[in-house]
Length: 170
Image (cartoon, rainbow, N blue to C red; front, side, top):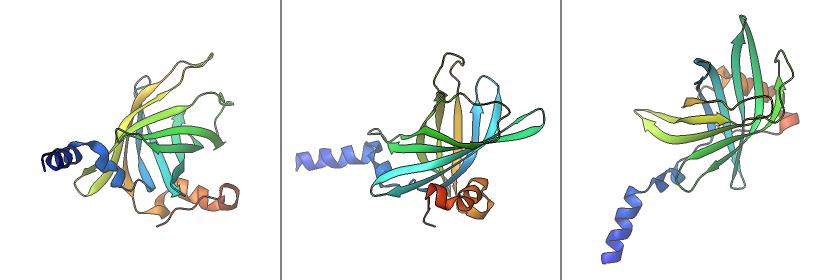
Protein backbone atom coordinates (compact mmCIF):
# COMPACT_ATOMS: atom_id res chain seq x y z
CA UNK A 1 0.00 0.00 0.00
CA UNK A 2 2.89 2.34 0.82
CA UNK A 3 4.36 1.83 -2.67
CA UNK A 4 0.99 2.43 -4.30
CA UNK A 5 0.81 5.84 -2.61
CA UNK A 6 4.30 6.75 -3.91
CA UNK A 7 3.34 5.62 -7.40
CA UNK A 8 0.19 7.74 -7.39
CA UNK A 9 2.11 10.82 -6.18
CA UNK A 10 4.84 10.26 -8.79
CA UNK A 11 2.32 9.93 -11.62
CA UNK A 12 0.50 13.07 -10.55
CA UNK A 13 3.64 15.17 -10.29
CA UNK A 14 5.54 14.02 -13.36
CA UNK A 15 5.29 15.69 -16.76
CA UNK A 16 4.55 12.29 -18.26
CA UNK A 17 0.91 13.35 -18.55
CA UNK A 18 1.87 15.10 -21.77
CA UNK A 19 2.22 11.65 -23.39
CA UNK A 20 -1.55 11.33 -23.15
CA UNK A 21 -1.97 14.62 -25.03
CA UNK A 22 -2.51 14.60 -28.76
CA UNK A 23 -0.01 16.88 -30.52
CA UNK A 24 -1.28 16.16 -34.04
CA UNK A 25 -2.94 18.89 -36.05
CA UNK A 26 -2.29 22.44 -37.14
CA UNK A 27 -0.32 24.83 -34.92
CA UNK A 28 -0.09 28.55 -35.77
CA UNK A 29 1.79 31.36 -34.13
CA UNK A 30 5.06 33.22 -34.19
CA UNK A 31 8.77 32.66 -33.99
CA UNK A 32 10.74 35.50 -32.35
CA UNK A 33 14.42 35.84 -33.33
CA UNK A 34 16.55 37.13 -30.42
CA UNK A 35 19.22 38.55 -32.76
CA UNK A 36 17.04 40.45 -35.23
CA UNK A 37 14.36 41.30 -32.66
CA UNK A 38 11.72 40.34 -35.23
CA UNK A 39 8.72 38.04 -35.07
CA UNK A 40 7.86 35.79 -37.99
CA UNK A 41 4.63 34.01 -38.82
CA UNK A 42 5.09 30.29 -38.18
CA UNK A 43 2.91 27.24 -38.77
CA UNK A 44 3.50 23.57 -38.16
CA UNK A 45 1.26 20.65 -39.03
CA UNK A 46 1.93 17.35 -37.23
CA UNK A 47 0.61 13.89 -38.06
CA UNK A 48 1.14 10.49 -36.50
CA UNK A 49 1.37 7.29 -38.48
CA UNK A 50 2.30 3.87 -37.12
CA UNK A 51 3.28 5.45 -33.80
CA UNK A 52 5.72 7.98 -35.33
CA UNK A 53 5.24 11.72 -35.61
CA UNK A 54 6.18 13.78 -38.66
CA UNK A 55 5.18 17.09 -40.12
CA UNK A 56 5.82 20.23 -42.10
CA UNK A 57 6.61 23.80 -41.10
CA UNK A 58 5.96 27.07 -42.91
CA UNK A 59 7.81 30.29 -42.05
CA UNK A 60 7.33 33.78 -43.51
CA UNK A 61 9.56 36.80 -43.22
CA UNK A 62 9.77 40.20 -44.88
CA UNK A 63 12.85 41.81 -46.44
CA UNK A 64 12.53 45.22 -48.12
CA UNK A 65 8.73 44.93 -48.00
CA UNK A 66 8.71 41.61 -49.91
CA UNK A 67 7.30 38.52 -48.22
CA UNK A 68 9.37 35.33 -48.39
CA UNK A 69 8.45 31.82 -47.28
CA UNK A 70 10.02 28.45 -46.65
CA UNK A 71 8.31 25.07 -46.31
CA UNK A 72 10.22 22.29 -44.55
CA UNK A 73 9.69 18.67 -43.61
CA UNK A 74 10.22 18.25 -39.87
CA UNK A 75 10.85 15.37 -37.51
CA UNK A 76 8.75 15.40 -34.35
CA UNK A 77 9.18 13.50 -31.10
CA UNK A 78 8.30 13.67 -27.44
CA UNK A 79 11.25 13.50 -25.06
CA UNK A 80 11.17 11.54 -21.82
CA UNK A 81 10.81 14.82 -19.90
CA UNK A 82 7.62 15.62 -21.87
CA UNK A 83 9.15 18.26 -24.16
CA UNK A 84 7.97 18.28 -27.77
CA UNK A 85 11.06 18.24 -30.01
CA UNK A 86 10.78 19.45 -33.61
CA UNK A 87 13.82 19.35 -35.91
CA UNK A 88 14.13 20.49 -39.52
CA UNK A 89 14.58 17.58 -41.87
CA UNK A 90 14.51 19.06 -45.37
CA UNK A 91 13.68 22.37 -47.06
CA UNK A 92 11.15 21.42 -49.74
CA UNK A 93 10.08 24.80 -51.15
CA UNK A 94 10.94 28.49 -50.81
CA UNK A 95 11.07 31.81 -52.61
CA UNK A 96 14.19 33.08 -50.83
CA UNK A 97 16.15 35.82 -52.60
CA UNK A 98 19.38 33.78 -52.29
CA UNK A 99 20.10 30.06 -52.26
CA UNK A 100 19.81 28.89 -48.64
CA UNK A 101 22.63 27.06 -46.87
CA UNK A 102 21.59 23.40 -46.88
CA UNK A 103 23.31 22.66 -43.56
CA UNK A 104 21.32 25.06 -41.35
CA UNK A 105 18.78 23.22 -39.19
CA UNK A 106 16.31 24.56 -36.66
CA UNK A 107 15.58 22.78 -33.38
CA UNK A 108 12.43 23.62 -31.38
CA UNK A 109 12.16 22.50 -27.75
CA UNK A 110 8.55 23.10 -26.75
CA UNK A 111 6.19 22.64 -23.82
CA UNK A 112 2.64 21.49 -24.43
CA UNK A 113 0.16 23.26 -22.14
CA UNK A 114 -3.43 24.39 -21.81
CA UNK A 115 -4.06 28.13 -21.61
CA UNK A 116 -7.71 28.61 -20.91
CA UNK A 117 -9.58 27.02 -23.79
CA UNK A 118 -6.47 26.92 -25.99
CA UNK A 119 -3.79 24.25 -26.28
CA UNK A 120 -0.36 25.79 -26.86
CA UNK A 121 3.18 24.78 -27.80
CA UNK A 122 5.69 27.30 -26.46
CA UNK A 123 9.43 27.18 -26.01
CA UNK A 124 12.83 27.87 -27.46
CA UNK A 125 14.33 27.45 -30.89
CA UNK A 126 17.91 27.45 -32.00
CA UNK A 127 19.75 26.89 -35.24
CA UNK A 128 23.12 25.28 -35.64
CA UNK A 129 26.19 27.32 -36.54
CA UNK A 130 27.86 26.64 -39.89
CA UNK A 131 31.02 27.85 -41.56
CA UNK A 132 29.09 30.79 -43.02
CA UNK A 133 26.41 31.43 -40.37
CA UNK A 134 26.33 31.79 -36.63
CA UNK A 135 23.62 30.15 -34.56
CA UNK A 136 20.35 31.94 -33.89
CA UNK A 137 18.07 31.57 -30.90
CA UNK A 138 14.60 32.69 -30.06
CA UNK A 139 11.13 31.72 -28.93
CA UNK A 140 8.27 29.87 -30.56
CA UNK A 141 4.67 30.47 -29.47
CA UNK A 142 1.87 28.56 -31.19
CA UNK A 143 -1.64 27.44 -30.47
CA UNK A 144 -3.62 24.59 -31.97
CA UNK A 145 -5.95 25.73 -34.73
CA UNK A 146 -9.05 24.08 -36.10
CA UNK A 147 -9.51 26.39 -39.12
CA UNK A 148 -7.47 24.39 -41.64
CA UNK A 149 -8.86 26.38 -44.57
CA UNK A 150 -7.21 29.57 -43.25
CA UNK A 151 -3.74 28.01 -43.23
CA UNK A 152 -1.26 28.76 -46.01
CA UNK A 153 0.63 25.62 -45.05
CA UNK A 154 -2.45 23.40 -45.35
CA UNK A 155 -3.33 24.96 -48.70
CA UNK A 156 0.22 24.30 -49.91
CA UNK A 157 0.12 20.67 -48.74
CA UNK A 158 -3.29 20.07 -50.31
CA UNK A 159 -1.97 21.32 -53.67
CA UNK A 160 1.03 19.00 -53.35
CA UNK A 161 -0.63 15.98 -51.67
CA UNK A 162 0.64 13.45 -54.19
CA UNK A 163 4.21 14.71 -53.96
CA UNK A 164 4.42 14.68 -50.15
CA UNK A 165 1.78 12.08 -49.25
CA UNK A 166 0.79 13.97 -46.13
CA UNK A 167 -2.67 13.84 -44.59
CA UNK A 168 -4.01 15.20 -41.33
CA UNK A 169 -7.09 13.72 -39.67
CA UNK A 170 -9.56 16.46 -38.87
